[in-house]
Amino acid sequence: MIFETHGHYDDEQFDTDRERLLEEFQRQDIRYVMNIGANIVTSKASVELAHRYDFIYAAIGTHPDDAPELSDAAIEMYRQMAADEKVKAIGEIGLDYFHEDVPKEVQIHWFRKQLELAEELKLPVVIHSRDAAKDTMDIMKEMQGRLCGGVIHCFSYSTEIAREYIKMGFNIGVGGVVTFKNSRKLQEVVEDIPLEKIVLETDSPYMAPVPFRGTRNSALNIPYIAEKIAEIKGVPVQKVYDQTYANALKMYKM
Image (cartoon, rainbow, N blue to C red; front, side, top):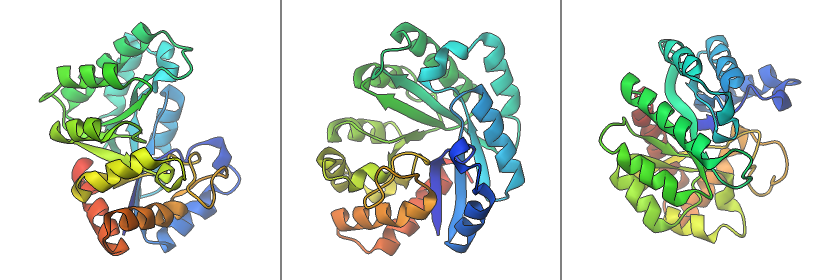
């Protein structure tokens, strides 16, 4: 069985064939999907999608690129939304310094606020961190012992940083990037860390694995990710499926 721990199936790229695609997931042994919110609109859409399909669950939160949309009223709205039984995490939240469109201080403020909400609600977190290794780690260390775990999504940092997050109780999200020719750093992370701390994800419709890089991604491509992880770690691919499935159930408390 497969647990797709991070996709955006409410995205407009799926508008033409969403129902058919999600039905195919069930035929391909994709047991659960966590649909991830990235702002207020997509968080609401994520919850709506979760109510339409038994096997889909929702994470709610605002991505750092959309941090300026947040307010105390928005945090209160997320608090109320999180009472829904289909909401299993706060995310994706974090820091992204790649584009430099949103001031760092704005990102940091609302990252902390959303982490505090997760602490209050005892929900795991889905962390987005891009070109912001130190600030993300510093903030997560401030929260150490106060959070209910979660995942560092689309992990892109060093083995040493991965080890630190694992010590703090977090999982490492591995997606299509692990299949790229230029992904040696991520492959080294996968080789080093325990399989018990890896979860499978796609970030659909983005980040499709080789041989579909550059096309619309979906959980149907997870076998390419799992096979690469199995190759790196020298284990049967079924072991990758079984262990990452168990890891995801534990992480999302399902």
